[in-house]
Length: 144
Image (cartoon, rainbow, N blue to C red; front, side, top):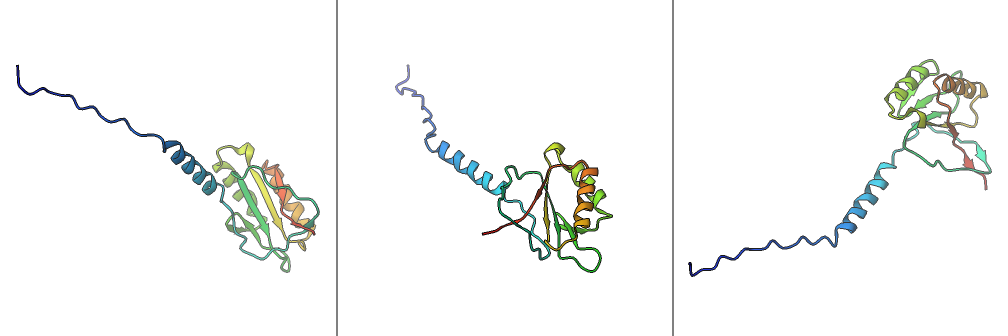
C-alpha cells in the first residue's frame, strides 16, 4: 500500500444564477433589433389626414410603396428601396412575393401623397389585386 492517498478532485458545479438574466437580455435585444426594419422615403410625401388611425400589428413581411408629389404625367413611385414605374411594378412585386417565405402574410403599406390623382391610386390597387396582395394599409397623418 502506498503512503500517499490518491484523492479524486471534484469539479465545481457551474453557477447558473445569472443565466436567466443573460438569456432575457439577449432575447430583448433581438426583439428590438429585428423589428426595426423600415424603408426610408426617398422623396417628399404629404400624407392625407385622418381622424382615426391604427398601428400595424405584425411588421415582418411588409412591402412599402411610396408615391411622391405628382410631376407632369406620372408621379415617382418607390417600391421598398428602389424606384419603379406602374408598368414595371407587377414584375417587381412578383419577384418580392416569390422571395417571401409565407406569402399569405404579406402586407402592403401605401404612402401616397395627398395630391396624387385617384387614377394612379386605382392603378396601384389593380396591380396589387392582380398579384394577389390583398392586405393593404394606407399611411396617413392624424388630425388634431
